[in-house]
Each structure stands twice: as structure tokens, then as C-alpha cells.
Amino acid sequence: MAKKLRPDTLGVRAGTVRSDFGEHSEALVLSTSFVYKSAAEAARKFASTSPEDNIYSRFTNPTVKMFQDRLAALEGAEACVATATGMAAISTMVFGLMKSGDHLVIARGVFGTVVPLLEQIAKKFDIEVTWVEATNLDAWTQAIRPNTKLLYAESPSNPALEVVDIAGLAAIAKKAGAILAMDNAVASPALQQPIALGADLVIHSATKYIEGQGRVLAGAIAGRADLVTGPLFHYVRTAGPAISPYNAWTCLKGMETLGVRMKGHCSNALEMARWLEAHPGVERVLYPALESHPQHALAMRQQSGGGAVVSFVAKGGREGAWRVIDGVQLISNTANFGDVKTTICHPATTTHGRLTPAEREAAGIAEGLIRLGVGLEHPDDLREDLSRGLTQGKA
Ligand SMILES: Cc1ncc(COP(=O)(O)O)c(C=O)c1O
Image 1 (cartoon, rainbow, N blue to C red):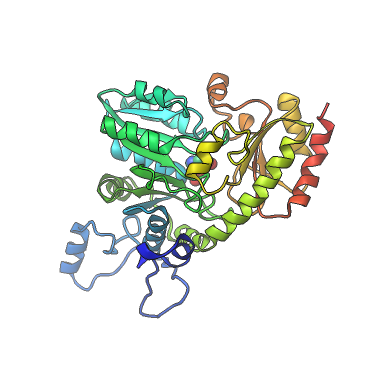
Image 2 (cartoon, rainbow, N blue to C red):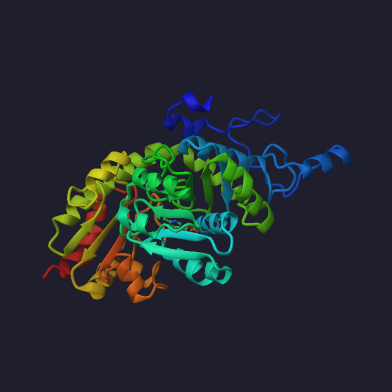
């Protein structure tokens, strides 16, 4: 069924399984474990790796399975495994796929917490890491070594909104015999499907647009069945970064409105980006759907909309950025994005504060940079709210 349907329909319908009760809304199966009819059935299920065999909710759970199947359908993926958070998905990718001595090539400018994960934790296990400029395909090619196992990037990236040529990167990975994993949290599958462009895996912080209302943490890896149902599922089942069924259910229901939310988010974000670009208190706006974005043409080829993260550099460096943030009364000063409520943050001193100044510079995170996660409020109200701090800093 799922393959013939359009994305808006898949978001509402894909993956649904009804229990014998015939419930219309998907059931939240809050159960740690599942009962067996006999000792022999228990033994058979424990030996199984099938997602159909419910045993214990660290391995398998019917609500989690519905979430995984719906996200796989939206991403056009063969399989999906859910995780507790987006970082759990990234850790599962690294430790589920790589061994000591393997090499990873990664874009500079990915989400800040990925840097200490690789530089401090993965390094303890001798996983080699090379950081490259995301938008420079030659740099990716030059970084490839005989032991390169994985290439990893975000597009668009958080918060600098760099756009990577996914098909170009997929060709490099294929030639190297390496796996390409793309983080699709910022665009969401409503706007971009990296697998159709050649990626092997898609990583999600489902905490963002998949869930959509800032309620729960969740993550997922979708993509090639041999990787997802093989080493990645094995890692989740064994190391334990499993998702709670409640969080999976919240994301499952969130996906029902993903298509319509993303249309509203993109339209508001474009309006805000154009207004900020014309504002005298703003030095620069980064938004893929603006003609001024350095990868605008590429972004419009591989995405069906600009997304809802708009980053801009306020005049006056850190002081100017903090003035804008301290001036807002409606917009939430908080670290998340992907919410219907507009959020604002200063990446250099919050989400990316654990990076060294050199790492931040390489990732394009200026002291004056502000990340706006544009929500679904009326844009006039957002403009009025931002104007307070921006107008003071226009000189
Ligand atoms: C692009 C991206 N990937 C991954 C993550 C990590 O996700 P989580 O906070 O769900 O662990 C984030 C969090 O902001 C993110 O922005």
C-alpha cells in the first residue's frame, strides 16, 4: 500500500496496524515486555531478530514499529530503527557501523554535540575522523582513505544552513565503497528525501519537525535494510539507546501533520527571512530559499522548500545578538527548534558553546549569529517582537 501513496497521505496512514480492539487512532502500547503462550514460543521469539516479534520494548514494540514504518515510508527507506534521541541515532550510527581503525569523514558545521562525541568519545576507541568543508566536494574526495567507512553531513546544517550536494556526495561515497549518512532533521522528509538522491542512511532528531510541538526527545535512522535491520538494530537492542513507546507514539501522531506544518513553517520563514534581510539592524541572513544564499540554486533543486530555520547575524557581535534575544517577549528563548512556537537562540554561547572558538569559526558560527526556528504564529507578531532589539542595534 505505502509505495503508491503520496507523502501527505503516508504521513497520516503509513505503518498503521490495528489491534483486535479495532481502534481508529494508533494504539500506544505502554508495556515493557510481552507474554508468550509457551516456553517454546518464548525461546523462538528470543532467537528472532524480526521486528514483528514483540519480546521486550528495548528490542521491539508495536507502537515503535508503527513510528519506524511511517518514517521509513516518508523517507522512501527500506527500513528504520528508532532511538531515544537524535544524538542516540548518531551514536548508534558511529558505534554500530564502525570499529577501531575505521575512518569517518564529516562536515564541519554539524550540530555542536557531534563534535565532542567524535573528538572525545569516539577517539577513545581509535575511530579516525576528518572534518571537511561541507560544500566543497573536492575536499570530501581528498579526505577519502582506504579505511574510510562513513561520510556524514547535515543539509541544511544547524545553525549555519549550509546546503550539501547530496547526489554529488553519494557518488563520492559510492566510489570509495563507503556509507553516506545524511542528517535530515532541518529539512524533514516533507521537503527533502536524501535516499532518493543516493544516501544510504538518513539520521533524524525526531525531536524536531517529526514530532513538531516540542514535547518529546526522539531519534531514528532510516535507510538500507542490510544496515538498519543488521548492525544498527543489533546495536540498539544490545547497547540500549531505545526509544520510549510514548515518545514514538507522540512522533507517530506528529507525522500526521508534518506536511501541512512544513508548508506553514516554510511560508512564515521565507517572509521572516526577507524582512530580516532588509532590516538595517541585520548584517546577513542565511536561509536556503533566499536568492542571496550561496547554495540557493542547489537547495531549490534538492529541497521543495527552504525549511523553517532562519539564521542571521545581528549588528554588534555578541552584544547585538544578546540585545535582540533579550528584547523578545513572545518568541521563546530556548535551545530547540522544529516547534510550532517560534524559538530563538544564540548558538555561540548555547548549543555550540562546547566548541572551541576555532571550531565555531570553522562551522560558520559568528558571535553575532542568531538562530530562529520560525513557528506558526502570525509573521506580523514575530516581526514586532524581533523589532524591539533589532531597532536599537541598527546603527
Ligand atoms: C541537526 C541535528 N541533528 C541532531 C540533533 C540531536 O538531536 P537530539 O537533541 O534529539 O539528541 C540536533 C539537535 O538539535 C540537530 O539539530
